[in-house]
Amino acid sequence: MSYAKQMLETDSGATIDADLLARTIDALSDCAQACTADADVDLRESDVAEMRTCIRLCLDCADVCAATASVVSRQTAFATAVVGPLLDACARTCARCGDECRAHADMHAHCRVCEEACRRCEQACRELLAALA
Image 1 (cartoon, helix red, strand yellow):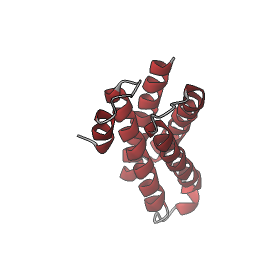
Image 2 (cartoon, rainbow, N blue to C red):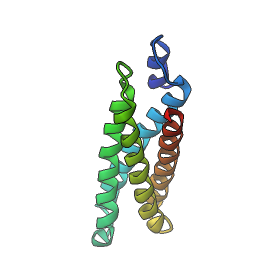
Image 3 (cartoon, rainbow, N blue to C red):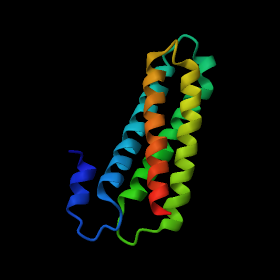
Image 4 (spheres, rainbow, N blue to C red):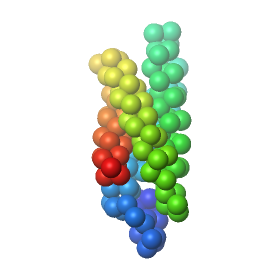
C-alpha cells in the first residue's frame, strides 16, 4: 500500500474517492521521478543535442507532476477551481512529454519507460478531473 493511500485512509473528512486520489498521487510521483531520471540519462547519450527537446519536456513534466502531487495531496479546503486546471495542465504536459519520449523509445529504453509513466499519469489526471466535474 502506498503512503498516499495510507495517509488518505487516516483522513475521515476527505471528500474525494481515496482510491482514485491515491492512484493519481502515486502516478504523479512516479511520473515526476521517471521524467527526472530520463532527463538525466538523456544527458549521457552520445546524441545529446538531438535529445534537447526530450530533456526539456521531461524536466517540465517532472516539475508539473511534482507540483500537482503536492496540491492534490492537500485535502483541507480542497479547491476544485485550482485543482481542475492544474490536473488538466498536468495531463497535457504528460501527453506532450509522452509523445516526445515515444519518438525516442525504439532507440532508448529509458524513454520507453518514461513514456509509460507519462501515459499512466495523464490517464490518472484525466480520471480525477472527470470525478471532480
